[in-house]
Image (cartoon, each protein chain N blue to C red):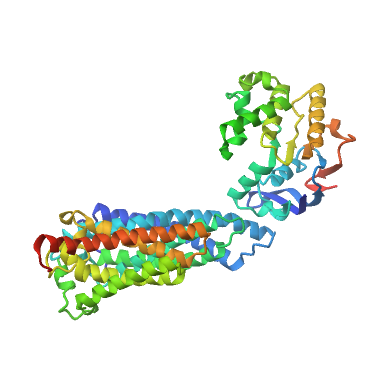
Length: 222
Length: 325
């Protein structure tokens, strides 16, 4: 389902300096798989996720999702691909603190311009799934870390995407909340989502429902 | 020799010259990028060069799009500028006198009309390219831009030369002399055509446009529109213009752009441009069926309004006075 072929990503700092965040990385992810990408900070995990979500383009190589070369898509089509296929859980959630829980969750639906009834149904489903409906009108800045994370996950799922990408999802959580997050991921896997988690949290390593673990070091696959 | 007479550097001329400098700067950058894209573009490649070209194509296309989007309506501003300059040139009654005042004016004007269509065509081609995932027209549009760049620079040089060569102390011909059928110029030869033959050509051409619209023959429709541009302008000057001016000897394609005639010339030329431009686009760009139909309809609507407007002048004159001019 996701083919990563000879991906290299280089950031040019100036004329004489560049950083290779990814160096000739290749691997495949099957539909419905849960993959954990391990690696220290700076190993290229976040860069890889950004390329899979077509948030950026590689320097060379290609990424193919369901036979579509997403690394070659023009910007507007990349946005459509992201809108229709990707749910992204960011490390720092990237929620809008001055908006309520329901408003934050609804944001990915706005570009689709759906019918109000359809929007309302999706919102209710997402909030119920992640047990956050009782806080629907509360401003996000008033929520705890765990609650914010659930809002972030609900937002990532409101469009029912096929692929969930999570970048260091437990970086700001304690062990208890991290384990709760792992339970949520398990439920999403049961629903058939393809899930890619970039993390250096050892709680994710060796889990029985994780299909594959891969490790990046200095941009290379170990 | 460049004239520095302050009267010539009117606000309008200065605006044009400053904008031209900006256009040269950005289109030169776009030209360099376009050459690279045309020479090295390989959509199937996943090399760093191809990704770099894809990124650069956005930059170049954005620059070109905005410049051409300004250049198209700027043509009207150029016409307006010619009209204003005519008030300070001895002998000129309208923009025709300004165009004819130097060796460059006529060439510049013809080139501007060609570029008008070319720049608008590029914008439509670019918009069509952006509707598809696989960059179907990218290489073509940058190839077209390379040609457009050469013509644009030629136009800007000619424009500078024309404004620089205008001598305010020299008497210029007015439109009555320029468009006179008794003169020896090629314009005079064209304008000495018989009105009946010309009207047959004009309405005959329009009939074929309608026919090809109904039959949806896109290439013939486009060709008919190209011919219509030429025949329309000649008919406008030789025949229809005389009814706008209500004077059988007044042949001019510029005077009716003035306030005296309620600026009707701008409406006439805008209608002609839009009608014939979309007629051209039907045949020149492969679009979806829906878009093609839309372009057909826009072309027909504007051409019909154009013909109706022009025809209204002689008809209303006849109704008012009972005779033809």
